[in-house]
Image (cartoon, rainbow, N blue to C red; front, side, top):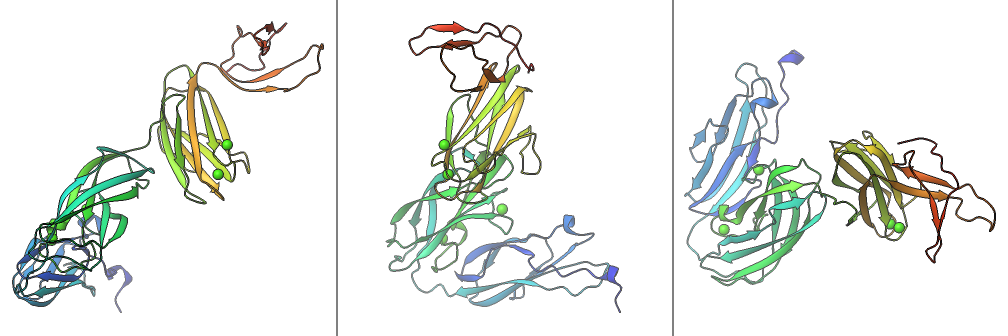
Length: 383
Ligand SMILES: [Ca+2]
Ligand SMILES: [Ca+2]
Ligand SMILES: [Ca+2]
Ligand SMILES: [Ca+2]
């Protein structure tokens, strides 16, 4: 019996690229890469590719492979370890190579326009143009165009599918079509990413040149930045949805965050963390008045720097639309109690907020503008 420590579980999904099996025209090339690496195990060092036509490769990433001979090829990759025996399960792609005898279309991406920065969690509109540079028209057929989010310029198994949109245009030879896709950028690390468009993503249309269907554009993904006192409109898509924001707070300020739910239905929560993304379990401050759609959070004497805000929709029964407003100020008044008092009697009003000091004065201002200064002011606690 084989000791447990000598057994390495088979790795089933080792081919990173191409993403799927399909048909191509003889003379086309595909890019072959593996997901497996030295970081995934002690010594997954042996790569054995078999292209089913007498060709083989021992490279992790063989790169471009040209298919000139028609027929159905089952390309296999076995990743193994030379020191320890195990029974590997090969990953495979079935590539059907069609003889190049008939006229075929050839979609090619000619333009992909994206903003140089995109906001995480926010919807974005991506416009692209595809030209048929082949020698046959596409008519009466439908296919899917997809957008992926990638760390590099290449479409592979590590990339996240953002949207897959059905398309059914008639595209004459040398004709083109332009489409707009709406995507919501997922919660990922801020920084440099690529959006990759993949036209005829599921290989539904037989066409020349698979690789000119892929088009990568670099973009910078950022958490939406709130500007002081400006309302930022956003929305929650359903129960449990979350949106992230950031605000930079200067020294000596209080930070007041107000969430205004548009239809006042549902239960929302605000989580705030200094210098890092908060979660419901890890945060520095939160506002979660149970069952309340609108929320308000005051952070007195906020340390200067970047605060990350998460709006969590615990229950989003109606519209998920809301606005978020973050205000930094040296003085904040968040409430006055009682709201009403009998006439001609001296009253004690409690003013809550932050930034009050020993020099603070309080005045009642009548609607006509007359000010009545309080006889005395005392602060319960200084912040
Ligand atoms: Ca093509
Ligand atoms: Ca990639
Ligand atoms: Ca509201
Ligand atoms: Ca609501």
